[in-house]
Image (cartoon, rainbow, N blue to C red):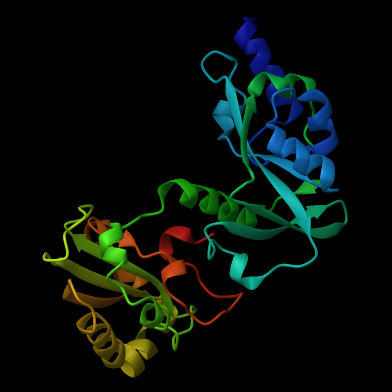
Length: 282
């Protein structure tokens, strides 16, 4: 057996994979390169976990030269879950639950939770065996992490032209069980235009398939008028197209030039059971 095969076998046998957890005290004792910021969190907060976020094949790769580093997040225990911090609704904070033994406990990860260590440290550790990370929770957790890297941003000079007060109320009358996502196509897409030039904007509103027929009948005309009213009140932004689709009608081709308009930009009614946008669905 080669050295790489031996390393891979040891890591695989130990049970290391994406989503496995490391005890905070074990981490402090056996991982020398944890950042001081994270060391302080682990020392000052009881019950923290390090959750491995690197994908499975890289976690157990036999070569520490090819895959030298291991990414993780620190999960800190909390007393209860805030509905506004679940399912990727908040890009800076995520609340979720884990099964620990026979009990369910609540945790938070946030913008300061991300860290990287040398992957070789896994050879001196064992993952916590009593943690239950169900697949639905894990998918939502990984989608939130993905958004930290891939969330669309728009030019500052576009954002400045939006009326924040009106924008925050744009979808306020709709529940996020029906309006599940808003997608924006901006032209030019990334340029910072001077005040004398105009951005062209196109909007697609996604509606849950189960609610689509009722929504189209009761709300389609009003929402389209509301979008017109909102953009007509702005200076330097021209709404050239607005469409409402059931999620089942959305295709990659339709959304190719569109970016998800972050849920932070809208204010659907707070609903912990609401459906997240299509690409965030856990």
